[in-house]
Image (cartoon, rainbow, N blue to C red; front, top):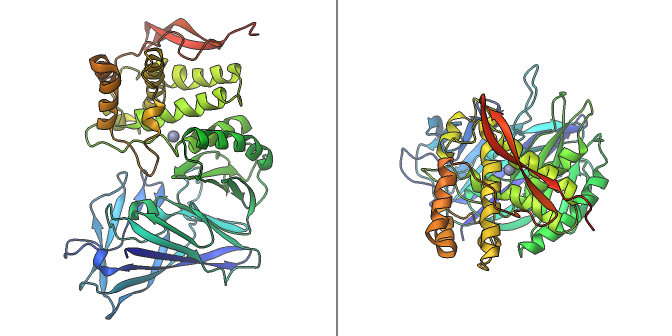
Length: 464
Ligand SMILES: [Zn+2]
């Protein structure tokens, strides 16, 4: 059995988690062989230097023959242009490999403002982090591992809890090593709002009424998981208190999301609610990265499509609110964006220099997919649901599958439309794109000093 065990043992001191020891084991046969192959590996520093791996020490590393000597070295980057490091064994491992590491919460640099939320961080009453920046793990490729994940809370106060992306306490689940990295965990004295597979978790008092927001989110979550025939799925939201003023962002892993709020207060409840719906929706429409092309048009665009339209179709949000969201997402992010004619494959190169380029795939993908959907429905050839229901964040589709899908359903015109979108040709909205109650209105705008055509959407007035 290909089993990976992970036990997390946080240690309480002065009202929070002072450090956390991780006990791990894996059959040595699964570890990549050869002197050039690292065993456990990790991203030491990612996202342009903003997110470091936790400070750690290796307490022991052994197999059936005893301790293994090792050295640490740089390895080729395996994640998001990060500086990556690998642990190289000085002899092959045999039997079961066991390694124990102790992690220390991050001390934020002076004047720190915000970050991707995957760093290993403590706050009063607890700690949270992401496997990617906390677990030393070998890369076992696509091999499914039966993972046994557990907590040892013996050095925590009474009432302390340990919660992972896939459940609370002991969890058994089959995942790849990459999927184990892409998980979130939370431990300490935790407040929670949990209902029907949706859980929100926090430590101190956030400046918003979490129970009210969770109450609004819950029926949308139910509706979505039924819609995607994924009734067993769960979604967990971990909240973190940032000790600086600019906060409110978040980072997603499969089936879970971590979001920050400022200890100094101030959070826009409505926009935070929309972020939560967006992140929750990521559980379903998903496309793997392609070597030649950027697939954010689908992963982000399709998430925008469903996170905007399902709450509307399900009757949770009205036409006014929905039209405003469409204007923000399609008009704002794409149609009125100076990068609207930039091909998909060029966007990743410029998106770190200009945030506006990063927004393009969200709106472009949304509008393209809405066009395809309305055409399929008009021709009685199904809808994009037929494609999306085959994938999830753990089983992402490929771009080739999408191309096959549009060829099967729409023929050569479907392929052409896809290529035009990828090449950055302006997408013209189909008539009646969002149903009878949301009208498409054409505008003339100035873009880069030139006159250009654009569109926005309005709720029909005098609706019955
Ligand atoms: Zn997203």
